[in-house]
Amino acid sequence: PVMHINDYWLLFSRGFDLISKEHVWKLKRLIDFWAAGFILLVTLPVTLITVLVIRVDSAGPVFYRQRRVGLNEKPFTILKFRSMKEHAEQEGAAVWAEKEDPRITRVGHWIRKLRIDELPQIINVFRGEMSLIGPRPERSEFVEELKKEIPYYSIRHTVRPGITGWAQIYYPYGASVQDALRKLEYDLYYIKNMSLLLDLKILLKTIGVILLGQGAR
Image (cartoon, rainbow, N blue to C red; front, top):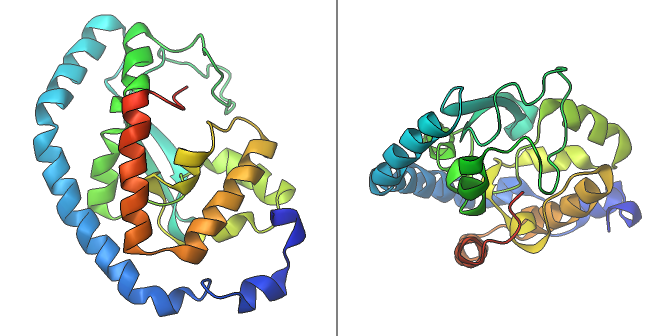
């Protein structure tokens, strides 16, 4: 529980010495690089079909670009297939996604449900901005707010963000500060226990979540 930990626990609790996990970092990056190339090749037919149906379904670009916060709080541009109407945030303010969000297009509903909208993030993995598995990268506007509201929120930025992660498979879609606090607890668990075996478990669980269509919004 984030509200009941302190600096001493983080400094001396086994698992948060990330230097000792340097070999895990290197192996993860190597796996990410080759896996990203393989996934890009295998999913090419799905990508081409998705590009076509988005073009036909609604006006606007095929890809959606958004600034997110990555490793060491370095900002980067995340790529997604556009699943919302163009100019979904007309007033310019960042808005949490809602359940049954009216901004989502017809095609967007299905590509979100099947998680196809996340496929372009493989390019982010290939570039080294993301990993296949890690804490979900958040928007910079939300990060500044959450750092003020939640203790130790910045710790989640000590590892590369991921397309999927421990919080994504065990906690529903977050759309509030309270949800972000709970998801941080899962992220801290992942960082503390990070290993290739845990990554494999998350990957297998993610496949199950996709097949059951859970958590999409």
